[in-house]
Length: 534
Image (tube, rainbow, N blue to C red; front, side):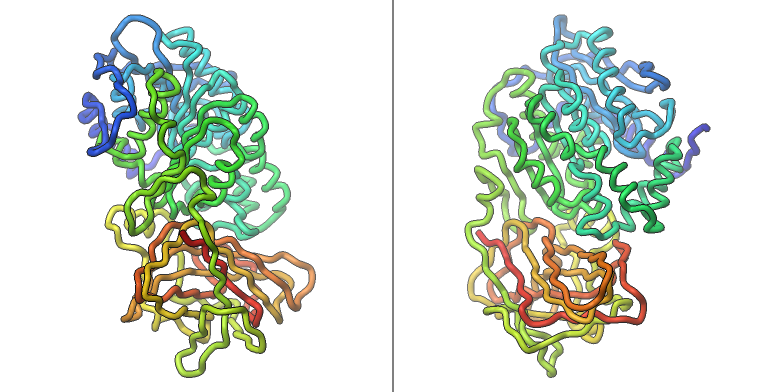
């Protein structure tokens, strides 16, 4: 079946490609960035050469850019993102070739003009990345001892998985990738509605979606056969092959966004902590693929600068990338910070008990020891102004503008949500890490969902979103239960005089909920929030 095309995405990709070709000749190094060690001055390149690479039952469309200088060079394999093609990295391929790399970018099977069906990082995709390496070694001046893989989103996931399956890959750059596809689809047993819907729309618009892909995403949307969908997804995440990845020991660079609505950061942090390879983690504000986006058209970009330094050290032989602390974060509202480990972000944890709701303002105290003897009942089918936003758009705009998603707290209907606000301390609270919420619930149905939002509340009622997460329980009986929920990792400074505020409701358009209509769930005493601080 020929892939269907959409005029709007084709136009946008053409626009990006035109800009990329125009911007490509100048290697980009972010203003103010430090180069760890001298790297060869910009070299001439061969220009772009478009090629076909046969892999099994598919012909993969690809392009190659190489240094003009004679001799063997390190090679970077760059699979394109979900919905895009091998033109995606043209600007960066020219820059990287100018730094001394052979760059082979390719369109994964099933997308655009590559043959076959979309395999969604399955076994055929793994065979393809090895076949592209074989082709590069046979048809370019690539050095077989210096092979790297890099990509954004789908390309990032393919690169990381490829390093688990092909030990020739010695260094990887994972930008807005995933570690665990089950967690991406079913985080805390909650199905992610908007992100999965966009993935399927792109596959059926710009690719040749396999029956397997459509069946699993249809089952996911309909809440059918979840064990089968999870089994399909589990085979497509690097976390499943962690032992192989550690045994192969590639140098792994990971860059993600705090607000990634496709692949939220907790799963990436977990993978990073379990890697025993040379590794680096960078987290910045923004949604999926936002932080690295401007680099695709050749604009100076911190993520791509870090990628250059990583490959320069592990494939070109430069030094210095590992001289810095391996964890670098950009908080939402503070300068960059570096740490020796992920755990070093958090130096203390403060427990905030949820208190009784006051009749006067419909708000409870967030703070002190957990208390008993109170309850707050929430309807299961009523939304509020508290929400996680729109996939890609809300957190994406925040990354470019610096304006956090916010609400005016008085607009949150207290008959539909529980609201707890802390006292206003005289010093800044530096939240760093994963806030954890412990809820005691009563009068629940056998299955249900709650969504928790953590806000920074100022003196006039404006509440800026710090982090959030949903939680779902899938039991067989109703009644009382405990729900422990990890909110997504964050880095945010709550200014002095502001109140840390928790909102809990039961509906958010980012997610499917498992709530029965016209029912309720009750939050009771003994509930608390643990906040990681530095």
